[in-house]
Image (cartoon, rainbow over all chains, first blue to last red; front, side, top):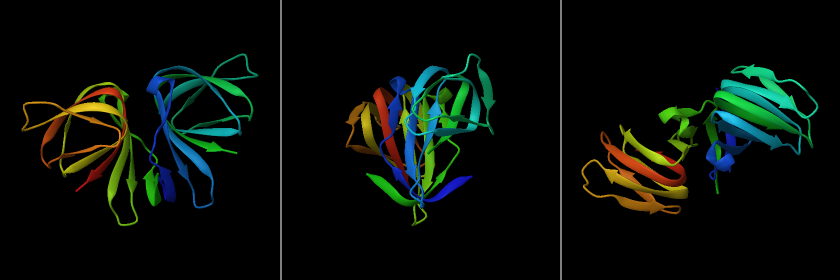
Length: 102
Length: 102
């Protein structure tokens, strides 16, 4: 699986002291995505645009801003986060993800 | 800074328990490169093809197979590793790198 004819920003995005890193790509259609890795841990992220998180490797559980309970997701699955919101994510096995925006 | 019109493999390469991760890209000329992140730590890597490691962020010191002493490198610098060899690298600040092969 790959993205073809994309632009890749060379500088990595670094969050949470390097436990979460990503690379930004821009598709031929002008869509921005990030390809990232989260090491095991619990993190909180805020969104501006809505996001779809597509999981390529690993396992996590997620609690969206309006939810009381956690939902489990693993490689091959996706979850959606509304815009202007936030979510908590607990990564149990190294997470390799594609983040789609908008 | 970016690479344009490249293919990006979606699956991350994971080494040393996730402390080193990278993404593989293929340029329009068919050259493979990896864009990676190394968290602080000391690692040993083996090479097959010769490699040029170009540093985008961070700081490390490197000892090549035939060297007795360590050399320091930081963002904006590169170091070369012969093929069929190995090197030790001590990352002191999160290292964001581009690995050129061949």
